[in-house]
Amino acid sequence: MKIGIIGGGITGLVAAHALAPDHDITLFETMPYPGGCLSSYHINDYWIERFYHHCFSSDRALFSLFRELGLMERLEWRKGTTGYYARGTIYPLNTPLEILRYPELSLIDKGYLGWLTLTAKKTDLVALDRVPADQYILENLGMNVYTSFFEPLLKSKFGDRRKEVSAAWLLSRVAIRSNRSMEGERLGYIRGGFHSFIDALVSSVHSRGGRICLQTPVTSVTREQGGWTMNNERFDTVISTIPPQELEHYGGPVLPRIPYQGAACLTLAMNREVTKGIYWLNMKDSAPYGAVVTHTNFMPVDQYGEHLVYLASYFSGPIPQRLDERMLADFCSRFSVGRDEISWHRMAVDPFAGPVYTTGYRSLIPRYEQKGLYMAGMFSDTNYPERSMEGSVRAGFAVAECIRNAGGP
Image 1 (cartoon, rainbow, N blue to C red):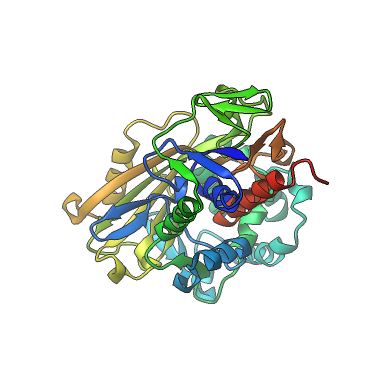
Image 2: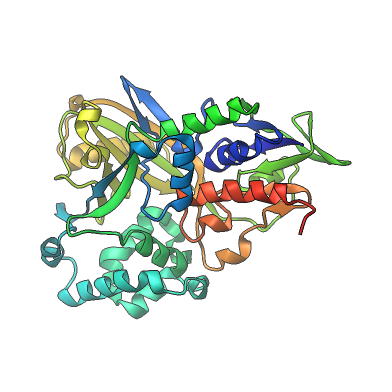
């Protein structure tokens, strides 16, 4: 069977990898590189992702694929330390003593947070799909926990749409990040960067006879008798991994609109470290970014020869003007960094970085099969209520299995 795949992110590449041994595969990717949000820059003699990434100990499908591709020996486990930037001060929040010292929360508030962390994995997320996250926190943990801890996180992640986000997403987020020791969270990373994962998938597709067409956007998808025509080429079936409403513009089916948001990630390099050893620093104070992610406080700096920092911002609609300059200027001022100390900086922008998990999102999730056309990606049920590499890998394998079973029981 001749299969066309739209989108060269994780889900598209995994589907191509799974189907290429038995089918004629052509994958179309708009960008000049594969990988989507997991693509990387090649700087000096190292690779670094355009958007920060790590994996979790529960990512079984991802690790199974790593083994298949010969990457498992390169997987390293590191401690991901966290903290809060509040009232101009960096507060580490890893050890019990550091948490007790955090002045923005009372002892009772911290007890509530501890309770939430312990119970999140046992919570029925289906029942919380239509419950707003802010309502859940206010009713169960109180106003101060919401305003001093969760509201800045929701605001940085979802902006003006934060009050629409479901408690299912929030509790899933807490649960997936609860694998912590006394010093920090246990997170995984491929030594040398996740570009080797993307390269291995690309090599697998090519070795099995598949084609990957970069810088080739899909401009039309038309249903024909017995198949589809895409970019004037005939296919027996099509897999789309882009947002369903975007596919609709090119002739795809009309489905309920899935709310999406964009991500802007400014990566910079410098010769010193400024976040007191913290990997993930959440911003409680107002800033043009919601988090400062110091990659080299997670992976050893000697692998890169310089300190690497991400400034992460999310947006809805058009990207704010001059956002990269505003982010860089704020970072330099706030952390007393001279512009001459920054050896390079680059901005990555994805206007469809991921869905916003609003209340009732579960009812919007499309089936994999849509009238002979298949859909899978960040919007799939495997990525709900928390998107991840694991969810995207599982979506790729799931849609491939749907195609194999077409017409069967």
